[in-house]
Image (cartoon, rainbow, N blue to C red; front, side):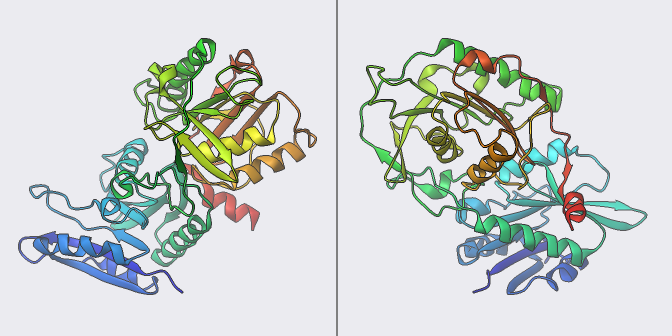
Length: 382
């Protein structure tokens, strides 16, 4: 069964709006698509409500600045794959600005429109800064857009939503949920890890500085986690993994901002009221894979001279564990019993893993050069 696509573009105002030639041309290359190209602003909310009926929503509606913007697609249907757009004709916005906007909209993909010598250019990118098409050919851009969405759709994920929670309003843009992560009633005690906390806080600043040359962007420390050695009095033989909760500022993170989680019968459970990072299912499985690892720090930066995975995966993709296994086989001589690993996740960031927090100090971090042109790498592979 083909995905149902809703495509909303063109100008929408109180005078009937105006069609977009680009939307007309783009829609020719999108099968099974319902198209609304320009119209009356007052009809947009009704069209937005219909998002629940579609697997993919391409929302390019252009609304005058004097009218409230209507584009909260993910609030209506958190499961849909959203493709947003941004006109950047005069290069007013930096690529980092565009990324922040994509994150705020929870877009799976975004198309930036530019203009040179009266010819429109298109840049198709994801919220991690990977470019999947850049050029002027609408058919090629549409092909790459669908190709990447099809890839995202096939990714395996565990959700971090408890069964009694309002998932619509809180869904994170990476999560196309296929399995549930269950809320546990277990009691727990979080051990104090002062040295590890200090390292995490220091990296939170460094990650932002190497990428954006500022310490004011906090998203680039993805998350941190640890587990305790066997025999800690508040744990069942090291059963619990402690993962930083979602959307916490790691520059000021404290021990009470870690969430206890555990794996049981191949299901992820979390304790307490706070949800852990979207990368939790991956890290829980990595701890199971590496018996000597007790600490992990995941970021959206690279590590100098560390090996790279091959597949570009979004946050939360369980396939990341398979990519890491390949690196262990190829780069670490298939040794899963080491107590220290540094691995770059291509198009995403990196992960540091160690048995001791001291080994995580002074790692040579390098910023990802954004944008990363993944379509060029695809051409090389072909």
